[in-house]
Amino acid sequence: MKRTTNFNAGPAALPLEVLKKAQEELVDFKQTGMSVMELSHRSGEYEEVHNKAKSLLVELMDIPENYEVLFLQGGASLQFAMIPMNFLHEGETAHFIQTGAWSEKALSEAKGFGETSVFASSEDDNYSYIPEVDASALTDGAYLHITSNNTIFGTQWKTFPGTSLPLIADMSSDILSKKIDVSQFDLIYAGAQKNLGPSGITIVIARKRLLEKEKKSTPKILKYSTHAKAGSLYHTPPTFAIYMLSLVLDHVKQAGGVEAAEKRNEQKAGILYDTIDQSGGFYKGHARTDSRSHMNVTFTLRDDALTASFVEKAKHEQMVGLAGHRSVGGCRASIYNAVSIEDCQKLADFMKKFQQENE
Image (cartoon, rainbow, N blue to C red; front, top):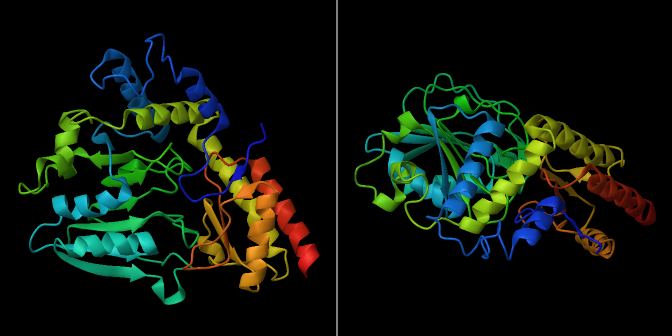
C-alpha cells in the first residue's frame, strides 16, 4: 500500500503506526471480544484507556497538579462560547489579541456574553504577523485570550504575553508540537484533529482555581467543574477518539517526547521555508519571518492559474491538502507532528522541480 502524503489542515495526518495498532485492535480489544467502540464507558477496560490518555498527557506536557485535564466534545468552537459563558462576569471585560480567523470567532462568541476589547491585532496586514505586546499593564478584566498558532495565515506565537489576568489560549493547531510552560496559562484548549488524534474530542487543561469563578447560571453540562468532578465521564465521552488519543500520545512518548517532536518540527519547517526563501520570489511566504508557524507553512505563487496547476500536479505525486485558504490564497502545507521530515523533503523537491518547469 502506498500512503498519500497528507498536508491537510485538519482532520490531519495520523502516525501510520497508530493507525496499524488501531486496526489490529479494532474488532477485538484486549480479548474482550468487542471493539473499543463497543465498550461501556463505565467498564474497567475503557477506564484503563481513559486514565492512560490523561496520564500520558500530564506526563508529556508536564501539567502541574493544580490543573484539571478534561476530555470534552464540541471542538474549539464550543470553547469559544463556554469560556465567556463561565468566566465573563457582569462588569468585567474579556480581552483578546486578534491574530486570525479563529481568534475572530472566539471574540464574536464572547460579545454575546459581555464586554470585550481587542488589546492588539495584526488584522491591518491580513494577519501576517504576531503583534508585539506588553500585557503586563493589563490588570483589569476577566481574562486575556490568544490563539497560539494560526492555521489559515501561518503565524505562531514564539513567546507568550505576560499578564496578571488569567491567560487563556486556543492551542488547537500546535499543542504537543513544542515545549510550553503550562503554568503560564489558566486555561488551554485544543481540538484534537491536528496533533492529538481524530476529530471528536477537545482537550481542556484548566487551573483549578479558575473553575471556582464559574457563573452559577451556567447550565450544568456546560460547566467545567461538572466534567472535572466526573472525571470527564459526566455523560458518554467520545470513547474511540480518546482511545486514539492514548495511542497518539504513547507514540509521541516512544518517539522521544515533546522535546524530540519540537526538534523535528523545526527541521521540517526549515526545509520548506528555505525552499521558499531561495526561490527568488517564485514562492512568497505570507507570514512575516519572525512570526512563521512551524505547523502551517503558507505561501503564494504569481497567479491563480499557476497555483491551481501546482496543487493539481502535487496530487499526481500523491500529495494532498496543499490548497490555501481563501483568506490568503496560494498554498498551505500543514506539517503537524505526524508529517515526517521525509514528507517535507518530498514537497520541497517537488516545489523546486515545479519552479524549474514554470519560470
